[in-house]
Image 1: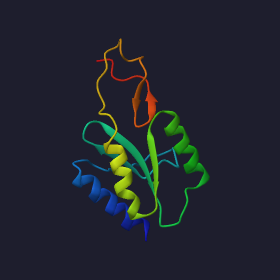
Image 2: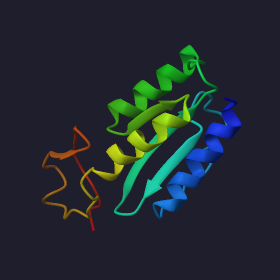
Image 3: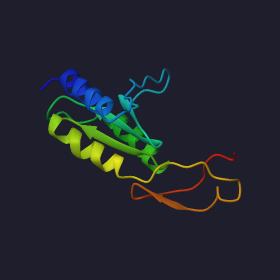
Length: 121
């Protein structure tokens, strides 16, 4: 299946969940994932969309690792059958919350990752 077809199915599925999936363009910083997935409750992930059976380039893998080290979920999607499980996992994550300055340094679990920090507000 072509990349564009998989990408359109992803965007439609995210919209059906009440979210948005804007195209992510990062001038001057090549290799970033294709889409941001933004779901209700402050849930966010990056998705690299590939044609079926295609793999990310080395630079893309490097960017994915940087994002993961920062605590973001990054998925590679090359089959429309992966859309539902990816979105179900993201939807099951804890809702994002604003943290006070005192709580900002306390670790918390989000999507199986320990996230530290938040809004100072």
